[in-house]
Structure formats: C-alpha cells, structure tokens
Length: 145
Figure 1 (cartoon, one colour):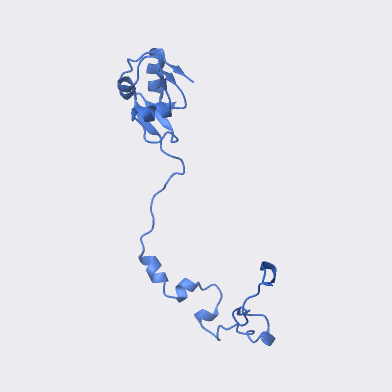
Figure 2 (figure 1 turned 30 degrees about the vertical axis):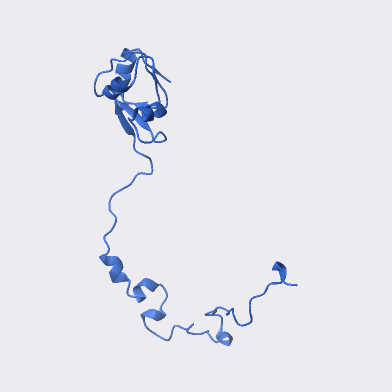
C-alpha cells in the first residue's frame, strides 16, 4: 500500500549534484571544471563580474541619505488643543485621533508650545511635550501623567 513513509521519487527523476574539487577519481578534480588559466579560473571573481552585470550595477544610482528606524513624532500644537478639547478633558493619542489631530495612535505624539492654551485642567497621558508647552500646561492647571 502507498503511504507517506514509503514514497520514493520516480527512477531517473533526481540527478546527483556535481561535486567539484574532490579528487581526480571523481572526474572533476585538478582544475575543478574551471579550465586552465584566466580570470574565470581564479578564486574571488564574483559571478556578477563574469556575467557582465558589473556595468549594470555601476550605472544604478546609489541610495543616498539616512532613514531612522524610529518613527517620527506627530506634532500637535496648543492652539489645536484649545479648539478640540473642553476643560478637564483627557488628552491621549486615542482622544487626539478622535479629534482628527493625529493619523496613527501607535506612533509617538508630541505637544508643541505654539499658540496659547486657554483650556483649563487638561489631563495628558502617553504624550511627549516640549518645555514651552509644559510650562503653559502647568500654568493652565493641567496634569501630566
């Protein structure tokens, strides 16, 4: 009966790979199928160079610059908080998303000190803030958790 444990490939369907440089008795010793002299017979010559791809690689523009692995802060100004939040509200990435001030609640959020904060007693959670924003928030009676 045919089962998983006794399956075998069809006869002649699998070829043994060519083992090069394993002695003359193997039939592929001495020059190891590389021929005699020349660049292609030497070690350390990349296949790309031999295949003529070096020119193509040199013609491609290099990728310049630097990309940080850390996500950028989403900036929210104090005047935006004044428009969207009432006295005593909680300000967190989720509430900022509902207000439409940030796109992604998982990315870091930073409160910046542009504008004037007239809203009193705001409660801030899970947000970064600049020094000028912190001063205005504490002046308006806000709490930072």
